[in-house]
Image (cartoon, rainbow, N blue to C red; front, side):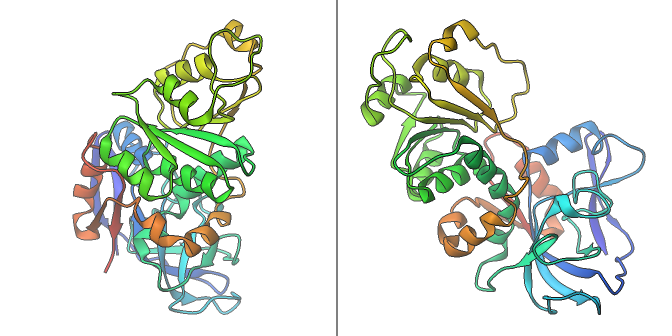
Length: 337
């Protein structure tokens, strides 16, 4: 079979490798779609995951169809559509340092257990949408970390796939959601997936607009006018987001950070002391990988709006280049025949 691997710093190749053989407790999944994540570009740049000897398989957002089922595996049949949990694989995280990658024609799930390693999904959901499961689990963990409740006023900075996924998650919890970005078509998409309002931070005063949308917070020790926003989520990774939040957050607000900040960010504890701002970090998806699957199944048309480009596996290297080119695409998914 063919698989995409990192072969050196800045280098990838589609290589021929042996198709996995399965045992009685294993499942062989024919890949039907695999999303490309920003971290894939990072893995390529550094030459491995982590840098190591030999080629490294890519692709950690896999969705597929069951091709073979071991005799001892329960709850699965050939032809079932499934989504995988990359972090549960016994031979290492799929596409993130493990022995297998989702940008392959087949993936073997060892000691497969439904609900732990993979789950079935309705067959009417297009595979590119199913392949959103992993990044949407990342977004859902960020939502869960900020502990929203119905009626909360939320602002999400960044209308990329994670930010949009989080916006959907907050709306499903009954929150009022504002999305901030600088790209008009991203803001249009945020409205289509259900955001209550959007702010173009390149053209508008974010602090002023948040007060207009979420009201002004009651007076407190903090100086200046403060927004009534309850939860801020940084899915953008820009230092200005942190500066904006600390300057506008009300007493007792929460700041969640799911974005990767590539450089240190200055944080003035003296300033935020007066607001008792709660800051929570979010990484991965400890419990959310299949929690979000149910929501995707029920709302897949809305999630489908997040996918911007689908590219066939035969052009996988072009897909990787497109996904890593700033501004060229928002969410690229590789599809398999």
